[in-house]
Image (cartoon, rainbow, N blue to C red; front, side):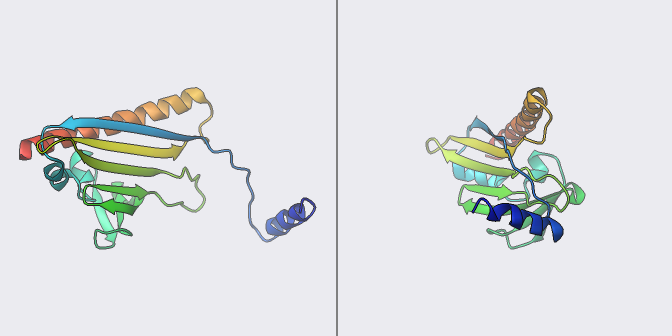
Length: 166
């Protein structure tokens, strides 16, 4: 097998395929905030797949799908595409597909309204992505902090929207 692999890689290179040795550095950013409303009321206010336009203040358009798994949303005038890959009554998960010719960071997000009791809940947001394209640990830490700041602000906005609505 060891002698066979270099031949395969050489053949793929001749055919125009590029090979790369991946050394991903996956990071997880977990955030949550307490909300003074039920999880179902919270989700009714902020859980729509394009509600991101309200709580993150960016444009969102559903480019395909019916709101269920497989639905595609396009953000920032087409700069970001996200595919709905998981969904429950109080949560959803999405991924950003690879773009030809660009670094793929395996970005996934998950948002969930978690009941605490009949009148309170927690809103949880988790992001997982690869930071191996960044030049050093300082750049990785800066990127993680910036994303955390963006999504913590979004959680605060969602909390305010849900509590004001109920």
